[in-house]
Length: 155
Image 1 (cartoon, rainbow, N blue to C red):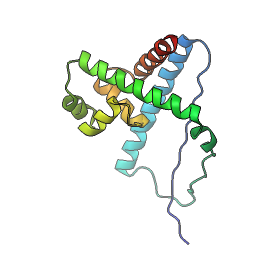
Image 2 (cartoon, one colour):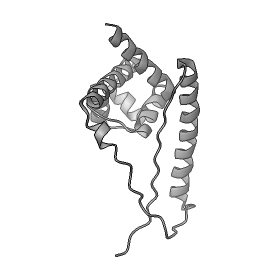
Image 3 (tube, helix red, strand yellow):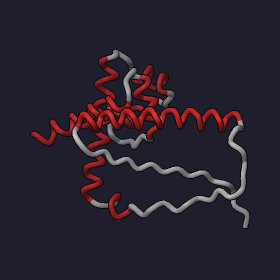
Image 4 (cartoon, rainbow, N blue to C red):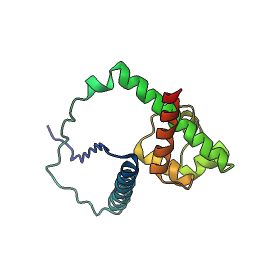
């Protein structure tokens, strides 16, 4: 059986320490990821990445136990809702319609609606596109989401 070459990348970031240091680490990682994504995108489009044999998909570690726990689902749903709230607040602050923001972020209007309603799980690239369209860094959006989480925990 012949297999196609596959490139698989995984990233797991664990941020620990004081909040200010965490924000700096997130910004640092965000800049690295943005440059990697741009380089890979450019290299794939221009054909600079050679087609070589020997790339095989490595099985991902099994995180299903964590992902399917009730606590994880609850916290993740809360994070999704709060991310959507932050996106909506920043969009309204910039006086943009959903259509305008979706166009700037290169998303469909329905995708943006689902993100704002907390019903969508946007990937890192989409979150970066939304942050860029709102003229903010992704780390700033994460900071606002974290602050919103902390406010809700206090209540």
